[in-house]
Every structure is written in C-alpha cells, then in structure tokens.
Figure 1 (cartoon, helix red, strand yellow):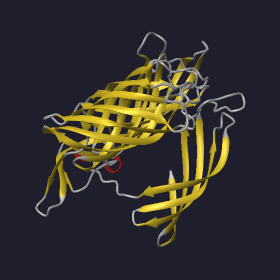
Figure 2 (cartoon, helix red, strand yellow):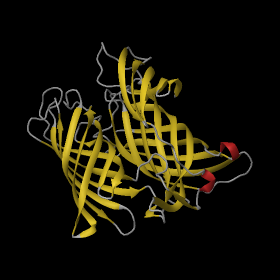
Figure 3 (cartoon, rainbow, N blue to C red):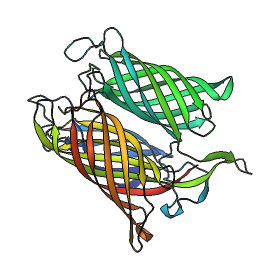
Figure 4 (cartoon, rainbow, N blue to C red):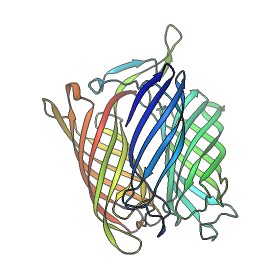
Length: 421
C-alpha cells in the first residue's frame, strides 16, 4: 500500500508499507524464520512528466527470524493510467485506443534445459555437470511489430538445484524469414538469479541469444530460443534451450479513420489475486514434517465463458521454511455465476505445474504440480470488482512421491475486463 502527499508542482512524498514473504541462504547467525517480511519505506520523488526519481529510507524485517536492516533506496518509476472495462462488460464487443490492464500484449509459458559450461560451480566449489531442467513464464509488450521488451521469471525443475530461480528484464527484435508469420531474431536480458546452491556470486546475470518465432493463424505462437546465460561475478555459465507457448492477451489491432492505433475484441475477465495457503504437514529434506503457510500472488485470465488460464507465485510466510518459493501456471474450468442480490457465486477446478525449492522443503528436482477445487463469491453493483475465493487441494512433486501435501486457501481478488479474442 502507498500514500502520497504533494510537496510541490513536481515533487511528492510517498510512504509505502509492504507485507510479503522471502528469504535465502541461512545460517545459525542469519535466520529468515518462517519467511514473513515487513518493509515500510519513505521517499521523496521528483517528477518529469510521467517519470519520477525517488530517494529515501526503507526498513526490512523478518519478524520470525533475526534479519533486519535500515537502508537508503533509489527508485525510478513511471506513472500511467490503469485502463480496464467493468466486469459487467465481460462477453460484449469492445474497443479501445490504448492497452488495457497491466499493459502486456502476450504471455509465454516455457520449458527447457540448461547445459552448463566449464567453470560452473555450486557454492561448495563442486562442478555443475548435469543438464538442468527449467520452467518459467514471461510477458512482453511490443513497441513495434518487430521489437519488444518484457519481464521473465523461471526456476529449476530438474537436476538437483531445486530452489534456483531467476528474474530478468528482456528486450529484442526479429525479422520475417521467408514468411511474415515466421520470424528470426535476437534478444538479450539482464537480471538476478540464485538459490539451489548455484554460485551466481551476488546474483547479477546477463543473457543473449537467437530466437525463432512462428505466429500461428489462430493467434497463439510457438517460440524456440537458444541463449547464453552468464553470472557477472559468480561461477555459473550455461547454454539454454527452451520452447515456449505464446498466448496473446490483447484484441485485434487496427488503425481508425484518424490514423490512431486501436484494438477491437471481446471483453474478457482478468483477476489479480492476493491470499494465503495453509499446509498442515509439509515434508522437509531432514525427514521432519511441519505446518507451513504461504503468501500467494496470482493472476487469472478468462479464455472463454468456462475456461481460464492461471499463473501463481507464492513463498513461505510461517513455519520453518523461510526462503521456500514456488511458481506455477496452468488452466482451470469454472461454472457460470449463480445467485442474485449483493453477491453471486461460482465454483471451479484448476490444475497448475511449475518449479519450486528452497527453505529445506523436499521437492525432488523442483518440478511440482497443484490441483485445487474452489468456490468463489463475486460482488455486484458498486462492489462488482471484488472477488473472494475459498479453495482446497493438493500440492506435490511431479517426479516420484517425494511430497504430497493437502492445503486450504483463502484469496481476495480484483476483477476487471480486458480485450481478447
């Protein structure tokens, strides 16, 4: 949450309070506890049009551990409108002259392998020689039909480095190869990665390589990438090969009679979620079992009246699994809304797969899956964007029987409409 106060025509004061979950490599002197994190921050910001630069102080504290510190911060940000249709418009034709929702044009789900290069080591100094499986997702915004920027998150799914995860900022371009729908290009990225015992030094990474994209006649695309990934001051270097399924998030683009860009399509519902999941018994690598509660962030995107796509990230917030994190994506089925009055309800099921690790939790190579059945209450009238979901399911490893853990979850969602096909 954030509150701003105007100090001048181009200056403001911002006070933030962030509640989250996280952690990392622990020792007897450095403990993240269950992983719950509190971070208040105060900044003064100078504005230049929609951009601003801020400087201030932040205090980070893990209440169930002993990690805490106050430090100075710098922020570069950009302010923009959040353009969206009302949930009551879902299913109707729509038109807009600007991107809706969070502003991305497409999302890709990917799987592949890292083949480590000579010199790659774990934190104990031992060579990394296995082929390492990875799973992830990225979102892109196109600044031109042949150029883009985006964000990417991925984690280990095989090879004994469960807990390794990375987040990168990417950019690239491509050119038609024999046909406008088949495109060859190049991309690069910078970001942070670590965990799983991999020696990435301070965590800074760079990545570069060729990409081949085929845009199908039906809208989705397939993408094949071959990247070189290198830590900037650690001992991790790998050749990455991955295949991605690309799903468009926006409507059909065209130009109106005034020459302005516009998008036409059917309004589809999108929901941003925040919540918690509680597991009564999670198995750890040391053989013990203990209850774990995770903080959850997610997004659902309607693909049709009864089918939706889902992406979810969560991390341990209570128990002894601080530094445990998981990223998942998949699909779900939902009923039509029922009832009348101030609240309506619907039910559904979903299945997700992804990568997990850290915090001493037993997850095999890192490939995990989750199934959940849920019931959802939806506001109407002035509260039509509010969603409350109660769910129950099971989470576990995809390889072997390393982990099977039932859970219950409670989430609060914000619903809005964006254009789709």
